[in-house]
Image: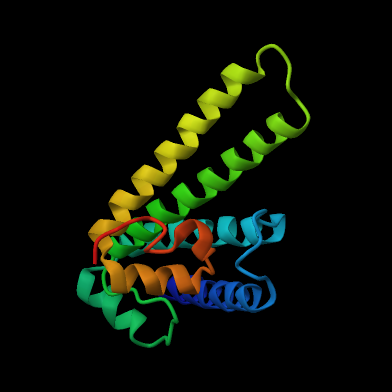
Length: 167
């Protein structure tokens, strides 16, 4: 069990490093999110999901003790924070996937039913971002900014000020 947790923590560390490399290479001003970045976010989501599942078999103290042996860039102080990170990343992925579909409809697929599909997708994107904001506000500015930085979330979409959150 401990070996599984160690592997997952190493995977998480490697993904955070890849995301940091991505952040250094791609300007934040890009409006289109590359598929490679979305793939990294999906991998991150899977690792956090697996880590949360593994963490269930640990006591809080044992889990924190195991984490202290690793120098992860992303702060994980409790088992509960894994579910918060998982929720946030799921909302981000959903938002970007829906946004891509919206762009596809607007650019190429404007038929009789396109208006209805477009409205449904826009509502879904707005809902994902609204739910994201609720979780972020509960997380707090400092912890969120660290999370956003380590996942290279584009500030144009996910910056604290862009989300219009209070300090």
